[in-house]
Amino acid sequence: MVIGGGLIYGTTFFQVGLTIVQVTLGIVYQTAIFLSVGQASEMTMFMATREIYYKQRRANFYRTLSFVVAYLTAATPLIVSECLVFGSLVYWMCGLVAEIVPFLVFSLDMILSSMALSGSFVVLSALSPSLDVAQPLATLSTVFVSVFAGFVVPLAQIPPAFAWIYWINPVSWCLRSVLVSQYRSSVFQVCDYGGENYCERFNTTISEYLLSQYDVPAREECVWGGLAFLVLVIVLFVALGSYILEHKRFDLPVATNPVKRNTPKCTLKKEAIKLELQLEQQYSDYYFKIASDSSTNAPLNTSVSVYDKKRQFEPVTLTMADLYYSVKSKHGSIDLLKGVSGYALNDSSYGVHWRW
Image (cartoon, rainbow, N blue to C red; front, side, top):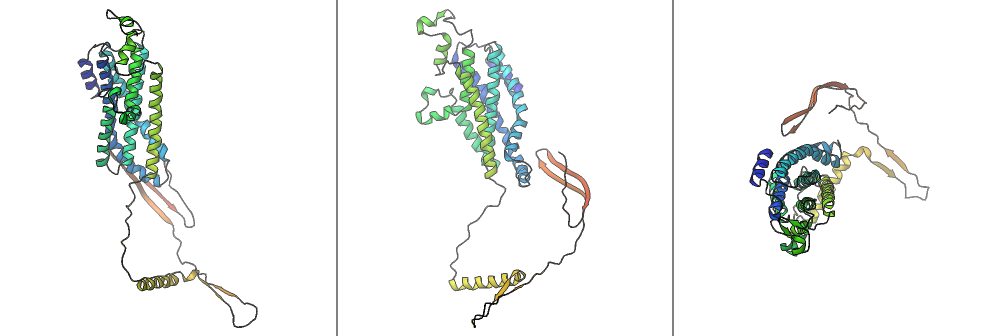
């Protein structure tokens, strides 16, 4: 799919050049959206993995932060390979700046934006009780990411009440970083381009003129600022996903509110006395009595009678034969223990250890 999509994008905009900034922005926008939104398919895997996490977290196998970092780290090779293959096809076939530094910035922006969106889908999955809830939330977030990225609706046309979505959108920072790196190359730092003098007509270079059409600042800080922001967003989503997984569980039974009954007070008092008598009889071994003779002025004599009753049990030796421990995954069942046999003597504690 990545190779096919890259060939379709590349042949559709084959060698269009950079003089039409709207087309250039559209190419970068489509590439970022294709790679970033494609990470939503990982939600199914994460929802299945979350059940295993709940089981192993109760056993205190590892910390929640370690689980989230390991999950995103395991997904990183696939994200990097997709971005390099798809991005390379689009970059060189569409005729972007043929220099190594802009290409590296382009590839790095695509990788970081894809990882940032992948982290956001982890957060949405952690917030959702089931996949039926997570997928609509992912669709809604995709709409906001796509609309407020600066291409469908330019920054100047976004209502002030929704401008904050543009500034926290990872894709919008990716677009700005890529565009500035493209148009700040030596090819566009000139006044004469295509037989027209932009310095005389617009009092600016061609790079600043083209970027101003979509309200993109031409400062070099936008390139590295965009990369730094994407890294910060990834760290934020990792921390937020870890916090939600640790404190918001969906594997526990739902608590129900007790139904209030109109029971007479005398009945409640009788039930309380009856319960107290039952507890006293059940735990009579742990009660002691204090008696004193208060009828005379003699010194207080206190007698304590403690009934110590030991529980009767017969020591046994626990044996195990062909012990198996399995967990479910997307591809089937994984056996963590296979055919473990042994024994445990009485008055001793043992643990079963294995290697992953």
